Structures are given as structure tokens and as C-alpha cells.
Length: 217
Image 1 (cartoon, rainbow, N blue to C red):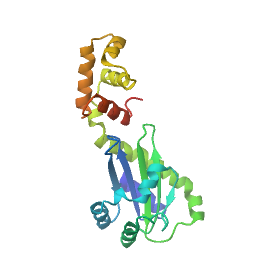
Image 2: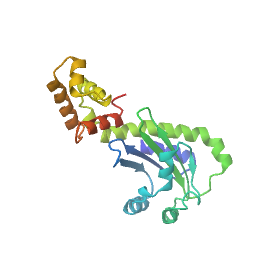
Image 3: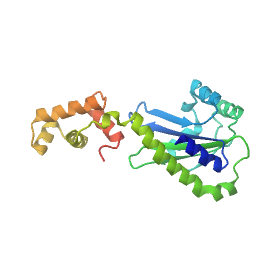
Image 4: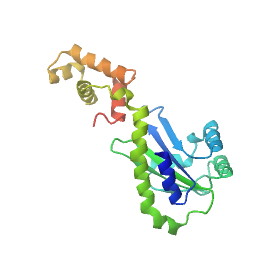
């Protein structure tokens, strides 16, 4: 899929493309997965310098769904990153975030080493750019979620999900037992199974994990 995305990016005049997604597994320590065809030297340098934490384009896309065009003002607080990127042939870029029905956010970046992006060109190609964002998110987020998120979630039974939903509504094990007409021990059994399958530390964490994965919708 990344190769196809790269081909679509080249059709729009870009040399490189990148897609990143925050794995919905934790509020305090979310994992970010990145797929790109950037020069290997830049990939290694970006990771070694931990630029993800200070990348202003990433920060923007976490806060806004509006497209972002690279320029000096964007990188004013990350001048070393900006200089290093240009040294690796990444001088002009465009980025936009996307959000799906499960609340999972992704970010598509297109970059090249030549020709600044004019406002006239951006307006002319806006529909194509936005379309590519949607396609990238639908395809790559599904792949990433399958690889990194759904291994534990896929094993949750219908009853376990039902118990987690009632727990998320603030019901105690005793109350859920009354609602479902089963014993409290049965409810606790389902809760314990959910904790194990979601690799959570406790009942609250299991509910949060399930919610982040969109399983309680």
C-alpha cells in the first residue's frame, strides 16, 4: 500500500510520502507507528534525535484537521530539525490529519526537495490532496490496527464486551449481575478475562483500552 501511496504522491509532484498513526492503547504513553519512503539516512537521523517529540507538523496535526504547508514559520521552534530535514532533501511539504469513526487519528505528509508549493497550485489540487488523505487513512490505519491493536481485542467475547460496556457506565459487578441475570462471580470472571486479553492492569484500564479501540461504540 505504501508503494501505491508513493506513486500517487509522485503523480502530484512529490518525491516522498509518510503516514503516521497513534496507536490507541494508552493515554499516558501512546505508541506512534510511522510508514514512509523518506531517505534511509533521514529515517535513522529522525529516530536517533527523537524528532517525533518536537516535530511541529506532528503537533499541528494532533490539534487540527487543517492542511499545513511547510515554511520557516512552522519550524521556528525546531530550527535544527528543519535544517536537518532540508539537508536530507526535504525542503517543501504538505501535511494533513484524519480521524475515523473510532477516534483513531492519522497523518499524511507529502514532501519534495524542489519547487515551493504555491497557493494557486494548492487550490487547484486540493480535492486530490484531501482524497489521498482519506485513502491513506482508510487503507494504512486498517493495516496498522490489525498488526498492532487487534490481537487482544479480537479475542473478547460478546459477553465480555457487554460487561465492559456496563462497567464503563459506572455499574458495579453486583449491579451488572442483576441486569444480566447472572451471578456476580460470573461477571468478575468476564472482567478478569477481559483484563488478560487486553493486557490491562485492572478493570478501569481494561475499560479504557476497549474504549480507545472503539469496541464500546
